[in-house]
Image (cartoon, rainbow, N blue to C red; front, top):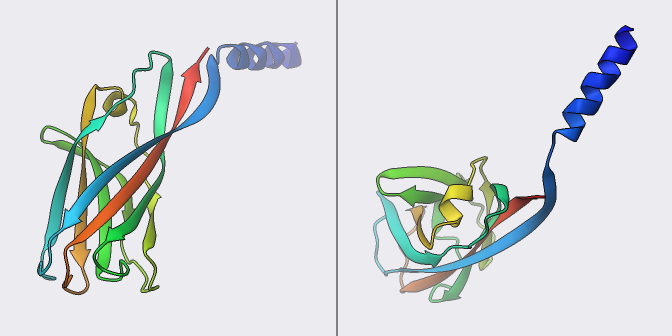
Length: 158
């Protein structure tokens, strides 16, 4: 009898799950870092007017990747020591991705570690804002434009 009861509970719990397919939703933003910013402070760049998506069937949306790539200016991103990427809504902000000790690699691309935060309410707006916070290890000597590619992994309902 106990086995039968456990089986019924197990079947009911799996049948209650109404999750559908999982899709990746990409976004792109740009930030221009002026030359000569100091290394002693954190610098915040607000990226506004990022177009959202119009999906009524989203159950949840988790950050899947954030990539910073040099578009023009500095040859690499070695002048950045720490980077944080936030979803902001008015005065409220949630960390989407971070990297606290960027290695010196002479590379023009850096991957940030995604955080665990639900982005559903944020990306389903008509337009939304993000914020890039950086702490420099050295002073950028030229104006540098950075492409920020980020994506969320969204679960759709059935």
